[in-house]
Amino acid sequence: MTKDKSKVDKEDLEVKDTVTPETEEKVAEKEVKAEKKKSKKEKKADEIEELGAKLQEINDKYMRLSAEFDNYRKRTLKEKMELAKSGGEKILVNVLPVMDNFERALKSVDESTDIEGVKEGIKLIYTNFKDFMTQQGVKEIEATNLDFDTDVHEAITKIPAPTEELKGKVVDCIEKGYFLNEKVIRFSKVVVGE
Image (cartoon, rainbow, N blue to C red; front, side, top):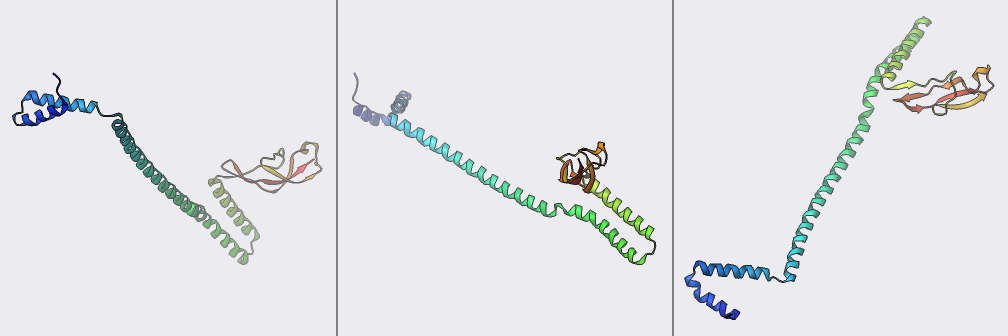
């Protein structure tokens, strides 16, 4: 009852002219069987091809992401450089009025005979400049008569303490130290009693 495959193909060719729904079903069944009979090699080749396409897609995404990151890095580096160049501009613009006041004071020193007026003018300029520094976050480090603290003080020399209370404490401040937003930007240079 089973027919040879070559005979089935010839019969299918001869009956092509008179296609019926039953013959269409038989042809479809044969195609499904042929699909199932695909060899393992063909299936592996299809899988490899699919994986190759996925790899290509992932590689493309990686290359785009890498390029985007490189552009971001260059852009932020450029912005940082520009910020560093112009970052001090605001501070310098605010220092200019203090400089103008000093120039006026120097001019008045040459012309003035009132030494008290000159002293008062210089004190006003100093107060003005000190207020400006405070606005910028710069704060003076207290030193005199306090315990010596290596975190904020730099000992220049030691001298015998004038009183027993000043042993291990700052007797004199040679150069003031400063904080900038709670960070030491210059240590106080001090004389310590021993």
